[in-house]
Image (cartoon, rainbow, N blue to C red; front, side, top):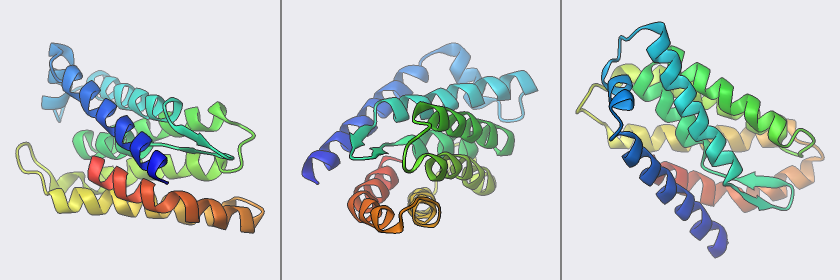
Length: 183
């Protein structure tokens, strides 16, 4: 458990570093500032955030038959920053990648769907955020809710149920806590 917490914390630190570096690039700055931008700019932002989801999947911790990861951060952030189109598209990119990354995995379908839903959740709460006005409590709760939904989906979809339950018991606390703090 301690190793999993440490590895997730390192992944979140890496995401923070990548985000910091990306915000220094003029093109990315334009994407982040221009909330009502063209379809091309919104699609570019969605692809960029989808790549964050992909990075989070590929850098995740392989534990038994699951990938403990920070993927929710990319999808949720896409929705919050870019609105519905960006959140849904980034969640779709991250979800499709997750599906094909481990197509025969025990939690593949649940994880793919929950990534897409995280993008939708970010899109739903995006109207509550305006540049410079970040409600950290809402961000924390949205991430916790997204990860909680992820765990519920594993329980509802993944079979056999006893293994799904054991998996959720093992990964729920670190993923919900660290992804919420990471957001």
